[in-house]
Image (cartoon, rainbow, N blue to C red):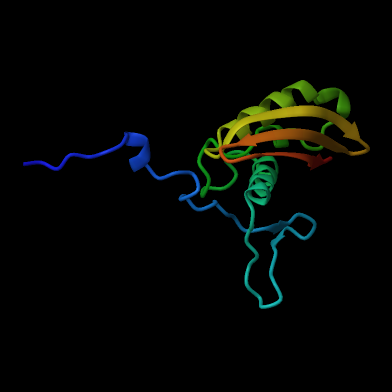
Length: 145
C-alpha cells in the first residue's frame, strides 16, 4: 500500500555540493563603503574563502549592539576600549572576545587567534578560521587606536 524507500536517510538529504555557497557584499575598509564594480553594482564574494574573510572582517570591525540590524551575538565588545593607552588594553581579553564573537557565526565552526600584537597604533591579529566548508588563514587589523 505504501511505497518502500530504498537507501538510507543520508541519500535523501541534500549534500554540501547541492547547497549554494553563501555570499556577502565586499567592503572597502579604507573608504568605509561597499565596493562597486565597473557597472555600478555592488561586488559580492565569489568563493567560500572570500566569504569567510569578509565575514571575519565585518564581525571584528563592528561594535556589538551598535547597529539594530545585527543580533546581540554579532560584533565585539573590545572596540569600546578604542583610544585607551596600551597599558589599559589586555591583548588576552581581546583574543578571547574575538574568538567568541567569530564562533557565534553560523558558518564558523572554530576560530583561533594564532598571534596578536600591537603594531604602532594598531592591534593586529593572525587568525585561522575553520568554516563549515573550508578553512582560511588571514591577518586582521582589528582597530586603529
